[in-house]
Image (cartoon, rainbow, N blue to C red; front, side, top):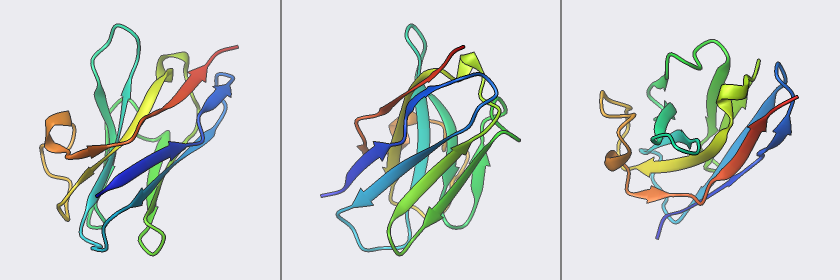
Length: 125
């Protein structure tokens, strides 16, 4: 069974940086996509970034500030977050899809079959 565990969240000042990690296990294929979603209180869950090994995609709100990367050997997916803003405050989740590319559906939460429990990111002075 696929298991995803997020880590790296915490409290950071505006303009600061944070790196999130998603540790994936329970499968052996290199053909998979991991996406980062976030959800703030009172808001819908939104896609932040997706990595498939074939392509990387970003939401417009984080483009140029966030970078997604992955280590297929360790099945670790990272989200490097720079120039953080208070509006980035949310619980961040990683999610798994059994595909090799992040298609037009990448920011649709229903496209993913497994989810981690989330890690809290708070950006505040």
